[in-house]
Length: 109
Image 1 (tube, rainbow, N blue to C red):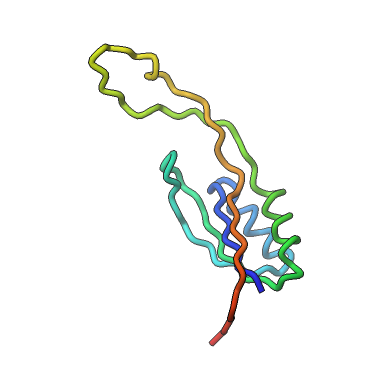
Image 2: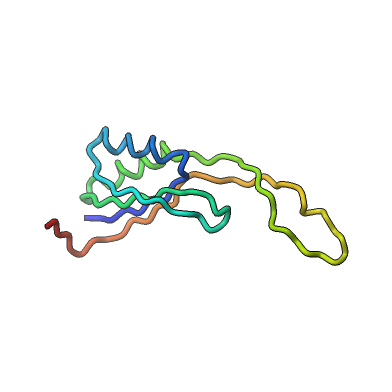
């Protein structure tokens, strides 16, 4: 058995959740916040048998899309008056960060 932790952008969370339901994958869904852009993420906690890991990873990969987004850089207190970084910059967000961990024991009470 494996424990899959999948962190996806909020924009992809509902679609991914629906896909899990369609293929009978039970997942716990948590609202989380990313550290870089401080934007909303969703973390799925999924326990699956070893033979279903590739299936779940494929669903996550097909559902979680990277996209471009503009962000305002943090305010820079620069005494030289250099305002080169005061304009929004384009960054890539989304996709999924996935951890697959071995499960030593599993109990359901």
